[in-house]
Amino acid sequence: NAGVTQTPKFRILKIGQSMTLQCTQDMNHNYMYWYRQDPGMGLKLIYYSVGAGITDKGEVPNGYNVSRSTTEDFPLRLELAAPSQTSVYFCASSRHTGQGYNEQFFGPGTRLTVL
Amino acid sequence: DQQVKQNSPSLSVQEGRISILNCDYTNSMFDYFLWYKKYPAEGPTFLISISSIKDKNEDGRFTVFLNKSAKHLSLHIVPSQPGDSAVYFCAATGSGGSNYKLTFGKGTLLTVNP
Image 1 (cartoon, each protein chain N blue to C red):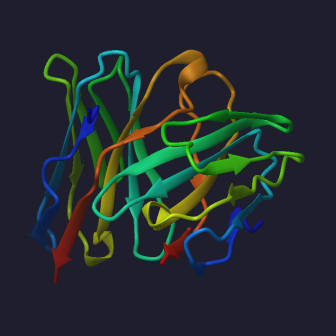
Image 2: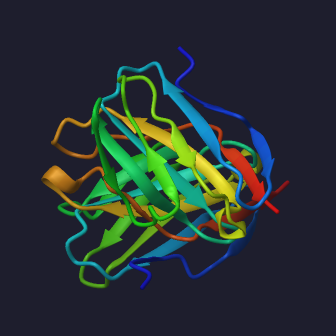
């Protein structure tokens, strides 16, 4: 049981380039999330998904796109990389039951630098 | 507008002593409060949570206290161990259908000295 895996671990992009950050979970969780963490800041929600085929914007969605074709995978796409997107990106998943609080499990993160 | 605030960027304590990490919030609609722990180069891991209907939740060496009237919560670690050295994030979420959206504070770096 690997939990939440993210690839790549590190990436350097030039301004205007595109890339996809991969995220996979093997816990059969229905909810998945993408966060970014800037230096000295907390995590901010970019996009989330409540199930395959359903995605919605979080707090900071501009410059990103997502898709969720399967329960396991939730890739994050950067179309035109900008220096402001330099950050550490975390993917997370949870089994949302609608009652109480459902723990979110995080991947190890992808450190992205845009130059 | 920061809805969850951790005003201490760092805290240093001696091994065996108590560590107290503080968190304030502004949104009275928050229903659950959690603490996540993060080691360098790893993702955050869930530590402990508390519902707004309680004022205390304990799990081993970790206790979270909630003061709703003051919109304040704190995490107590007793006794502190060097392995507790990490960044601790306070987070909050709403109830029912929205209890999956977490709002995080900026984090507090705890250093436990042997």
